[in-house]
Length: 77
Image (cartoon, rainbow, N blue to C red; front, side, top):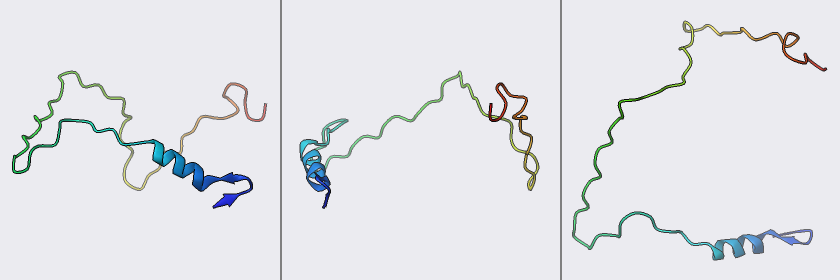
């Protein structure tokens, strides 16, 4: 498909033909062999969170917002 003087299909084909997937991980096992399972993930002892408190009761919405006039610069300034 051409748009103006830019042939986007040719660009896409060129990029697609220039890139190849890079394999990661171990080699493929020989046919008939069973691949061993990965070790179970373990949690560390130092877990830090940054979550906020849970919302209020069901059906309520916190509408408390800072006053834009009170913020630095104010609205439209």
